[in-house]
Picture (cartoon, rainbow, N blue to C red):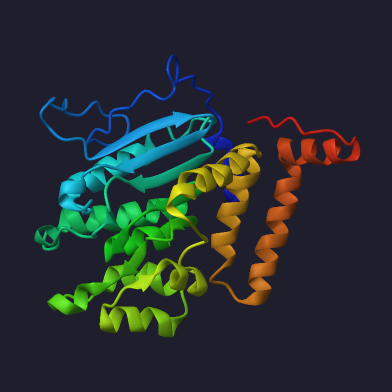
Length: 293
């Protein structure tokens, strides 16, 4: 099956790329993976920062003076951080968060007429869905327009009780059409349309009730709870989780019969994985499984 072949290819390399201090910040870089790209001057502000430990990669939108707007530069930096050493089996979870009171204010409106900006925006949102490891949004503050879309595009979203979500473009004569793609797939249609038609924000509790986010916690517990979820995922088999994520999204838009066919085939492929066999043996032997990665 193609998805299994892709997983095997994805896990073929075993680079040891995080030596020394694993929490040392890694260069965001505005270049595509594999390209050295231009050096960042010391005076140039860092638009995202990245660190990784124990299979968990933390990516932080760090441009609070611009309300963490998803400008072309930020999108390129975010894409680079997501894809950085993506084939490494050390990577099991990605967390996206932000500095400041605004998670993300969405598009840089000045760039909407630029084809490159539009293409990058779409590519990054698709990348979140197609990336083999789970991606968690850790939201503490306002997420509007494409910022709300970013949250809706992640696999899991944990928010503080101080967070809110909106698609306010209609108020300035620019309907949030691209954010509506992810929003309309995350919440019921009538909820999405009320947000899109009125531009009014919804609270974290409303977002939870409608399925936009996974969990709401007090602000002081946000990082702890997000890390608890991430560590649990990171303790599991990367190949099994990757197969499961790919299958979940593949079957979702299908009719019921096709969905069951795809899911049943995925379970057969799962059994053929090394970690699938290890999990079964460990269960029978009543021991903790030892995952290959």
